[in-house]
Image 1 (tube, one colour):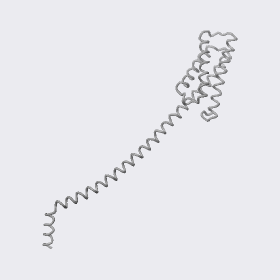
Image 2 (cartoon, rainbow, N blue to C red):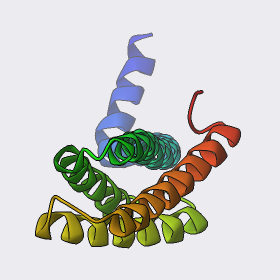
Image 3 (tube, rainbow, N blue to C red):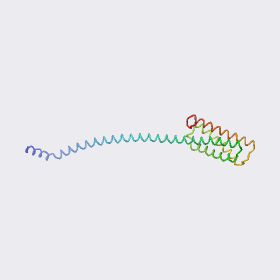
Image 4 (cartoon, rainbow, N blue to C red):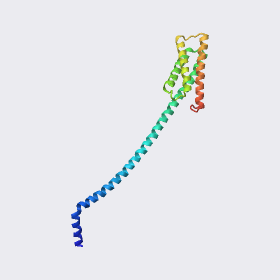
Length: 182
């Protein structure tokens, strides 16, 4: 046994550099395969993260669009209610109150038209732009004089009725589409 040990030691001392080189080569190969495996896992994780981020981004965009539509439709509901209220005020010749409510209605319509033009159907938008211009004409007339002739009263009342009818129709269409709860 002693002699075999010496031969091994002699061989090891003669080839120790080669043995270490071979061991280093095996360690390098093992490290390479481990790094490839880690890189593959990192790449897969990055793909999953990108897919998750895309889904999250789509969900955020959808949520923002739904919120915009809900806000636009709530303004449409308020405008519809204001149109009916103005019609009642005009029927009772309460022009100062009608003027105030016309200004409010104009603001709601301007808000819907300007801010939510992509959330409201185009046909609705055209009707709202027309309604807003008619309301602006009414406000101008009422600002000039809070007392109006019977003929002027009839014309203003027709404008209000037309605006109220447009808003009522748009409100009914939104309800029919399920965008507004009854």
